Image (cartoon, rainbow, N blue to C red; front, side, top):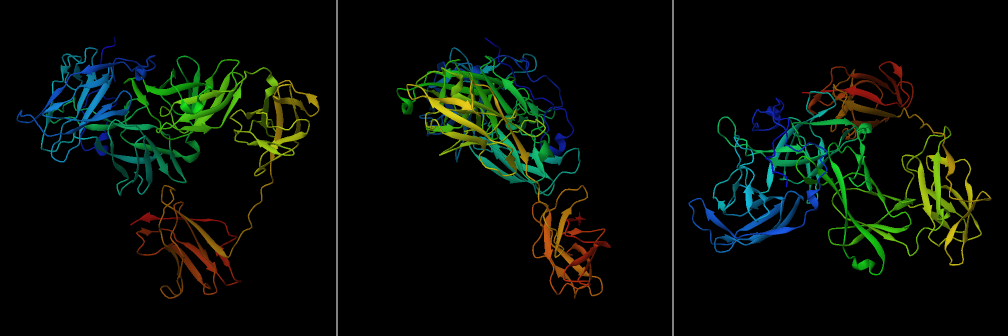
Length: 610
């Protein structure tokens, strides 16, 4: 059995924490733990339980608290609440806990508080306090023999904790204000905005993974799961207790700041991870140290009674702490290996209520591919057809390329004939998609294989596909462009439609307002200050700048002078270099901008805060 270790913070010795948190963890650098990354471990699937004896519940004076107090029993290995139980007559009832797992005991009561108890479940049913070890013996944990309730507040009481960290863009050193964020977890979504200091100040649930996303047309987060971890075992040199801090649950590093990236770079660091068995791969995220495991479950699905199916629980695991990493937002592409002769008919996930939610999928040989917006949350069900694959021609394999033979992803294909059937998934990164015959196809009549909807792209020449059927009425792809189909990949070429340039409109003054770093500034009211008659001949924009920093002003017959474009005096912003606008002198439009003919193009105005 592995030794349980004291979970030590990583990267605590950093000056940036001074501005990020009110309390600084100990200025000491230690390894996160004695288990290296990529340790092939899967304790998160543990299910064997042991009985933990009833434990006393007392107040600070050692007197039994006889009234009922609710305790939340949280399995931090699985990242889920196991149960909520109430004490009675000064005792917490006997519990059944998963052996070798870590638990947190919370109390949320109007009268009583409790400093959270962090325990490791032993095989003999004892609970060890993992915050009790000392520097002389990192594994000398004391036994949890009861729970002490208090009537005083303490920062380590309850399930919620606060973090307050600055937000920067790229390599910039100026924190960004007024950016809206969403922190998405399995239990809740928290919305917050960076404050006047450019810090994100949020209260969230301890030991729960939240995916960090930003609402911006310009920026994105190289997504990661943030979680609050208790470090109260590390006392400060002045004797004050350690606190609770935000960590990246994909690599166990402290999060002293959030660095935004350009929106187009949001998935630049994505990687693909493969499970220890080799049966499952997942892509679409920067997984860092997260490991992948899957386990087939012996679980009956009433809705699929009499059918053949597999139930697969796929989990990402933080290897440093042996904990489930729940990634609750994103677009994750799964590839699951099935028996070489099995043909999938449907793919589902099981939601929290036990309902089956069907997903699009494609199958190529023994690989079933589907997409989910989460990892570690929902078991997957692959249902199989009545018959195994008997001929490669049951599947039409297609690759879409451009004129230069580059693969084209995200293309949705269809087969159009007397009726129309569409592919269930769009083309992948390799430009590939497949169509599985489902016996609904009309045989003998040609279908045109091409794009389902010609939007930005058009298909140069569609392929003619004819279906046949065997004696059991099973349909298959009989021919493509008049030649017998044997399962080989069919290539179709698409081209981009000629882009239409919008007509310029010099009757509307289009402006984008940015700060000195080039970031868009929202909510700035602009006006045209008359050069000859300031205060009398001024013209105002009808609305302030939007989230992209943009605003526009239509010409009217009262705009007939020379102007300077600038923020209104009470906007909170100033402009060191106003832009000269000449309008109306030669017609019903804006004539020039800083002496150059104006054709409707966007003007950039740089402002600074007062």
